Length: 404
Image (tube, rainbow, N blue to C red):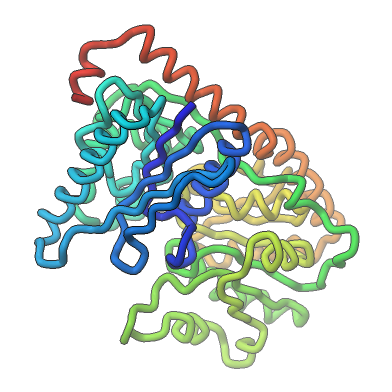
């Protein structure tokens, strides 16, 4: 198949390090290309990494970067113009090298008019701004919400990483049902695996995620004040980019550290961005406990990476948390807004080596059974094939008309 992937967050060239969606797309494209499928990745980027159009090399993808609209265009006009240019590029490419299927994220709503005529479009529910704004009670941007709703409604199929985000997106889109499926996110369990050499570092608590309030980092640091009081060996390693500090603004990491009592600040270390398969993996394998009190996720890759390594993992009980972890069996679930509850769950694991070992072992077993990347690409390809077959079999007039 020739698969078109729309992404303005794809790690390649000289652009900044990619976020969660970019990492997901990188893994998806790599797996599809390795499986023999042709992949074209196209997105709209700022001038710092636009005009990067790489030819297809070997079994790798072709990456096309369209330049964003001119700065003189107002925000609303520029947003619509960029999406029109993307749709025009897809139409031209469809003539030159036809796509079998196109995938777009719900985030930012890049296909408000749909895709090329007759080509099935599937929308991956990474978690739209609409979803997170409603779940986290934020005002949000109505233009972006409108673009996302239109893209969701124009897509022929949806892929949700969790049942929770699929059902919530139905409600937010004001529809009762939509063709699609749930395919949980996955990790390479042969890479993220227990270590034979690294030993557990007593008291080491590891957090891996972008460093911003939504990920629960503030509540985790508040919880450290409680944990450090009772556990002199406890220390926290925070791995991830500062996603909050703006040029000329107050340093968010300094503000975070101020939440920790002065006598405990030496027991919190901000390590910044680390390579997944070297730096992050090394810290996960040494962790006494991994803690991810995110306020909301569409699924969550970081917790299953820790589970795959066999580390006892704490995740949030909000949203899809119960789909990822069976509370008390393959990990622990916490109230992400309650620092006391987070601290209690951390102390349970630090105080009980037998519990820690059992949670770690059960967590890895759950990843191998449900979230193993070995089977993940196959499931995605099978779904793509079913979408293409369904489109060709039915040729529903309304589906073709809304893509025209």
